[in-house]
Image 1 (cartoon, rainbow, N blue to C red):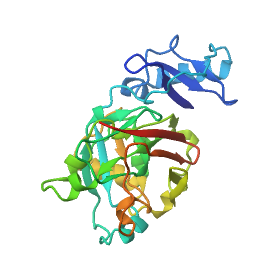
Image 2 (image 1 turned 45 degrees about the vertical axis):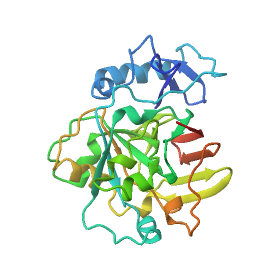
Image 3 (image 1 turned 90 degrees about the horizontal axis):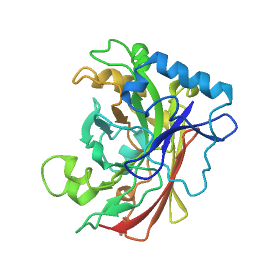
Image 4 (image 1 turned 60 degrees about the horizontal axis):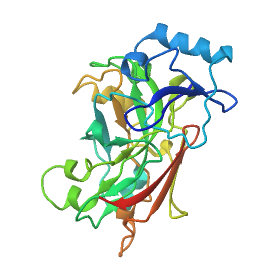
Length: 285
C-alpha cells in the first residue's frame, strides 16, 4: 500500500493511493497514519480491505497539499557516510561501524513544502535518502533476517544539511542537521510488502534541473537490515520511529570549489524508485 496524509499543515487526514493511482480518503477507516496504526495488524487489515473494496471516497488531488506520510514521529535516527561512493567523494574512510546522529521530529515537513535556508548559512546541501519506518518494537534484534520483520515501510527522505554548522562549528553534527524544515518526507509511506529488496532501489536528485545524485541503495556500506539490527543494540526502536539510511555520491560537499551549495531560489527535486518524488523551493529563513 501507498499511505499518505493530505491537507493543510497540522490538519492532515489519512489517505491512500490505490493501484490505479487514484487518491482515496482513509479518514473513515483510521484516524491517522502513525506508529499506533503501523503496530496494529487488525487496523492495517481494515485498511487493506477498504483499499481492495474500491469503495473508499475519491479525493480531488488538484491543489491538495501532501503532508508528511507519518504523524507523531518518535525519533529520527540518521546513518552518516553509509555509501561507498559518498565516502570516496568526501575523502572519508568507510566507517567500521554505522555512524549515528539524530534529527528532531520537528524538522519533518511535506515532500513539496518550502525549505528554509538558515540565517547565516553559506553551505546548505542536499542529500536524497531512503527512510525506513519502524512498525514493530525493535530491541536487541539478533539477526539481519529478523531486523526486516520490524520494518513497516519505506519513504523518500531529504536530509538537508548545513555543512559549516555541521563540520566547522565544533561539537556534534546536530547543529547542521536540525534547522527548521530540514527533513522533507514522503510523498508516501510504501508498505514493506511492496519493497521486496530495499538494496535494489535507485535514488536520484536534481538541483535546478541538473542531475546531481544518481545512485543505488546497493552501494550502502551497511544494508537496511544491518542498520536496523545495529541501531537496536544501542536504543529501542518503536513503531513510528524513522531511520534515514544515508546518501549516495553527488552532494555539493563532494564537488570541486567553488562548491554549488544551495541558495534561496533553488529548486530541488528527488525521487526513489517506487517510493515517489519530491520537489522543494528554497527560501531564506
